[in-house]
Image 1 (cartoon, rainbow, N blue to C red):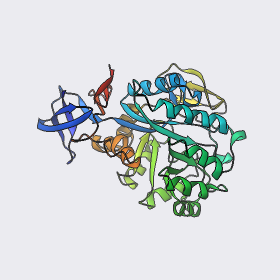
Image 2 (image 1 turned 120 degrees about the vertical axis):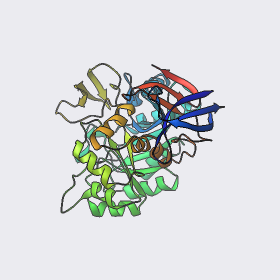
Image 3 (image 1 turned 120 degrees about the horizontal axis):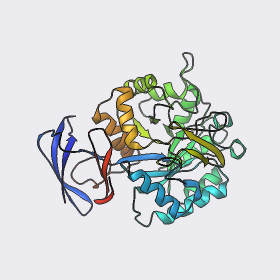
Length: 371
């Protein structure tokens, strides 16, 4: 199969390219001229490491049908791979998600590839629960964590590093190649220093559900800026993080360490109204998802929207937005053949119109969405 479009090359230049695909891979990529406005923009497929739901379904349903709807929904918006993300729930409910994910991942679905599971909770701080149930939050537990990790599908866990037992769990995760991320936390600078030494290497939805950036204790935000070994993700929907902060972080954190996420709930790509997240009622209106008290509860963001929004809010280039949506999460997850338009890489591609709307999405050389 041969595809033509505009693409950003290794030098950050927009060029017309011809891409040859075979057996689910890119076998050749040839530049042949300046960008052509009649051609779509081609990008490596987006990789979303934080997805609670979409299309009316939620990860916690723990069914193949729900996972299929979530993966197909996000594929419509350029996502070619994702991590199904849990919320604070009972250990049995979380185990059910892992069991079903293990089964689901053995069969190629009709949408984005499910790479594994991101455990968000229940090892978080009650004071920063956000839209997660405080009554189900528990202290980090090595035995419980190990039972979940043994499923073989956990790729990431978000927990509060200042909680008792968190360092034991983070060290266990790091030993097994699972990303330990600080999130829903009251951690300050000293807590983050200790966390990094204990295996934490990422910060979940930077700025949200954590202490702010204060001049006498810069907390997780400042620690992420200062420590070049830490990576972090951002919800760029224009609601969760102010435009000035997005721009500040994109300037302060080098372009290899920030990545875009959706934190999407079941309401993504569905009608506004009332939904549920982890047993809590959520109201969706004007593009925002909130609990009854006004607390933000995930988003209805898509990765295609996030790519457009980070360019608008922070003024970053197409090349950097592409890195944040594709190359950076691929590298963070250790995906050697994803996140780039290069020979030998998986044929995971998205074609975008001039206004950034997805025209089609391809996973492993197979078309999974056409507008």
